[in-house]
Length: 182
Image (cartoon, rainbow, N blue to C red; front, side, top):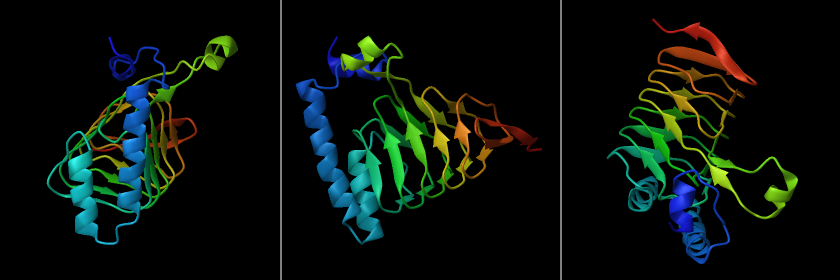
């Protein structure tokens, strides 16, 4: 099993692996191209060529940061506002009709709690999944391993530390259900 395979499987891996370093360097160049492109349709074309898969209709404002980019899968009618960070050591899967407010973070990496193991440089991660019709308001952080069901709304500034089912409104740090959607 390669370090890349381990990474995507959520197993401990070595991020200093040559293949992974080269993939991150490629992502840095693609981020530079995306973040310096003024034409929205050209930015969308860059994302379509870069991400693991996308729907036909997507729009993302600049700036955007990620680890790899090719581990991000986006459905139809995707919109993300300014200043997104999607750290994709594991897959990030985003459903159809998803809107993401400014300054949001989708973070799949994890680090060992034990300081000796952490200092060895080993990392691991867990995937993030956003269902259809999800709306993340500004400043939301979604942590590793979270799945949000369909029609979920997350209030501004929330930190989502665990998974939630369909049709709920979340807010807070840590996020909790404040309302159900009928």
